[in-house]
Length: 204
Image (cartoon, rainbow, N blue to C red):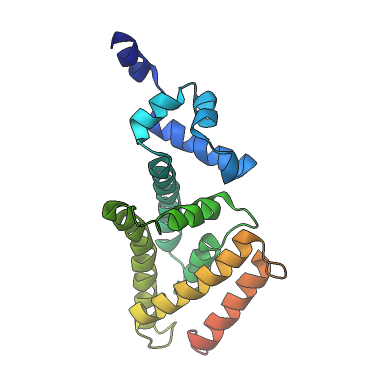
């Protein structure tokens, strides 16, 4: 018992573990992320990792939440700038779309969602995933409403338009993340800019 207690006291902070997990995904892909390998990376046994996270599914969800927290802070910084709504919407889209094939955040996101299809997935885990989606949606709705009120955007229903725009972004982003031939990040951003110009932006 004393040895176990000492090991827990000497374990790295959980955020360091999550950062190491994301770094391993970025470097080697999700298939190389094992509890044993992550333990070696942070100087812990796989048993101690299981003590903290209980399962690999929980580790992956915690890592996704950690990554989303960082993206959320960056999103808040971009969206609260003193800039036209269209410029901030472009920044939102740029942050949303993966950097390229095997983007680590999107790779992790797709894996977590895939695992959540299991009938044994806990409702609380699904709620946590929905909370991540909800944060992106609320920020987009608020930005669209502001743009409409300022006359920069057409008088669309912000909630309905946000749902449709995010569905478009999700579809394109999956193509980029899995490396679908003929669909790269710049092409996707071009498609989205064209869609926004046609469907949302008012004439100068």
